[in-house]
Length: 231
Image 1 (cartoon, rainbow, N blue to C red):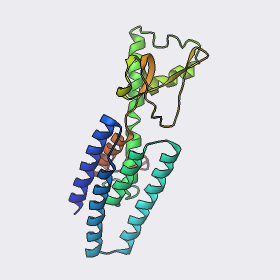
Image 2 (image 1 turned 180 degrees about the vertical axis):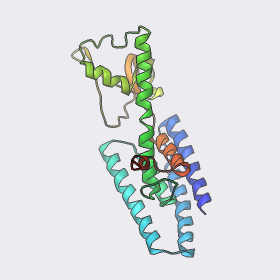
Image 3 (image 1 turned 45 degrees about the horizontal axis):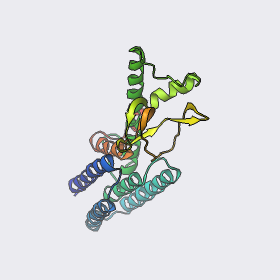
Image 4 (image 1 turned 45 degrees about the vertical axis):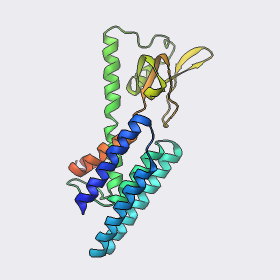
């Protein structure tokens, strides 16, 4: 039964990630059908091997990730598809025991693993920007009045592009105030994709993709957070 649930979850996340990447939309039918299959399998499992402890862990897993994902969605840290994906994972595989773990809540491990994987992006952006500076490109042209710390920070958040179209799903890292260019950095998810020429941007990479990789990492390796508690 576990292999079937893993197959359903992987298929669901891969399709959802592709859809989110291409259109920034995921059909709700995917979550409903996948969750229904997962719930059905779990009910069959519980009917054959009922344990109070397991039932309590399932309830905690679903309740905890539902609360966390809703709060993050409400304050704008991620979108509706991310929230639904995490809840769907919890409904399909509420409890999983990888080789390394702190807790067995599959969806929460996938979220924290995905969060760790997002840390790769700032490093990539920084290397890109430093490479351009070393090549003599004036990436801060027009932003001379901005503070050094802002210039340093923005190098980790995005890069400057000569031309961007709205369908490329980029979000702006700058704005004009009284005709003057300044960096605009927001910690919250912004779905206002921009178009324009010669602008600082950050790519709107769906968090769902990182959640997907976080889930795959969960079932193959375990909880990355567990590494920090080994020392």
